[in-house]
Length: 259
Image 1: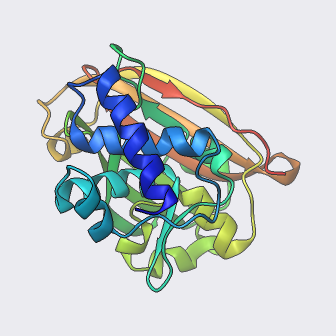
Image 2: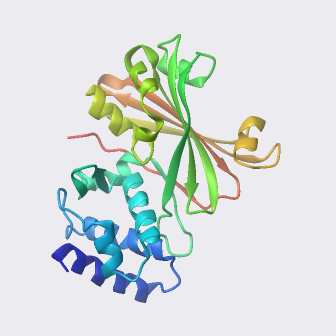
Image 3: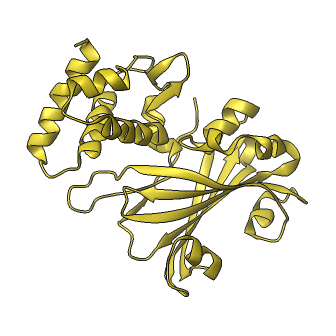
């Protein structure tokens, strides 16, 4: 086994000893997270292939793939055809990019989340996104359902000005799964998020969204509105998240300015 595989195997043993009931994909996800946060796996380091991981670790290929998808969604790894799987650059900003996450109250660990784009296109100005962005008449809306470790689902709607960022509406929806949307804006348009604000209210989740999340009509939950600003306090993006009331604890993160 190479050095990375040895490190992963040792960290897995530690995680399993500390919490033997943790699901296998969670063990692997958190072991690699620990290694990146501790600097043992550094940005640019190449991870073993899925086949090598499955051959050396007591996990199935499906478990390996599930853990790697979670790490990709968190921004820990960069998976591109022809390059393999690399530890992503600016790993210390993993959770600065992921503005919300859900925490296991028993052991204070983060539940892995898996997103699926359910709608991508241009919408009109009738909503709070227009009041914040104030750059109508059309806005890009990226809607994603987020499965939190198979425990519950969250609906996410991310809005940008259609005039400047309309090209995103023409992308393959799969290209926007497992990525941080504001990182995509920075990469494709050269505009960085400098800071954010969070607003959270408890209200009834709209009936169409209850149907999407398979919740009873009138279910109450949290509506989180996250507003992203670029340089000079200019409104950049608007993000709505609908969370069922019986979800695990939601943790909202602050974002440090990009250096």
